[in-house]
Image 1 (cartoon, rainbow over the protein chains, first blue to last red):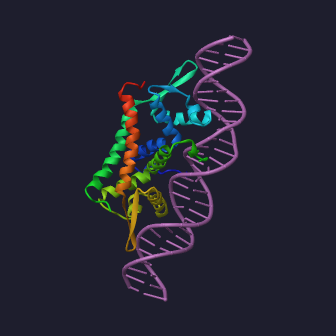
Image 2 (image 1 turned 120 degrees about the horizontal axis):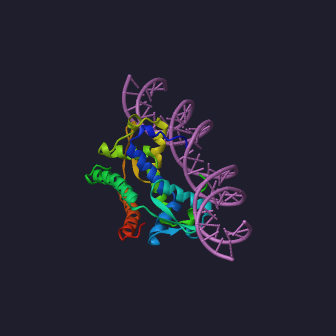
Image 3 (image 1 turned 90 degrees about the vertical axis):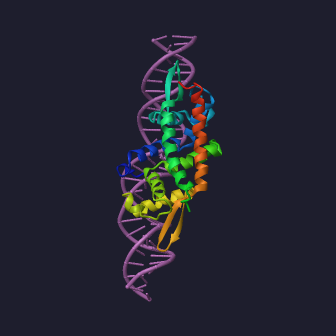
Length: 112
Length: 112
DNA sequence: ATCTTTCATCGTAATATTGCAATATAATTA
DNA sequence: TAATTATATTGCAATATTACGATGAAAGAT
């Protein structure tokens, strides 16, 4: 991408952007939704659910893991992935903060 | 990026991903926040506020415009940008839908 | 009409992301 | 131990994103 100039922005702006990247690919959204739908933890049956190659899924899982959104535990030969509720709350809070800012402003009739 | 296989995913998943991209850069978050902070509409004094080149800001503004998040109107020599409240509500709704799904599931003790 | 200001667009360099085949690793089973 | 299964990692090729200088277009000022 050409290097993003993170030093120009606040820590919150940079963190929001990083987290938004997690949601910025339909496969990662599908993975998160699938982890939820199958109730608790679920391993990489994702490869069959989504139509992507195993290596690709694994890569997406790693990105979600690095952001702390999910976490995996070894379950025999396979790996069980699940959502990290603590982290999830943080993320929800950050985004809601952004959303609220904007809708407050619009609510008071300042938008054109 | 290597082509994203949008046909593998639902319309909602693809739309969420596209919208998330809008937030996936700190400059675009800063722009949105600045548009809010300066109450109503404001033109490209953004170039001075953020430390990026004029062409770069213009490009970010175009992306936000293409997603319908903001909209600009010519005001003499300059251009007034502002948030699009209608679209904003949609976006907030989509993200809240995703967030709620996940926190519901976590709330019922299904997370590990 | 010409200059100036403000913003958009084009072209391009640098870097990031996506996707997958091939290969490595680790636990399980025969 | 050797074979199997499930995941992770590596190494590309293709494409997208970020950033900016240079240039273009449009409105106002001189």
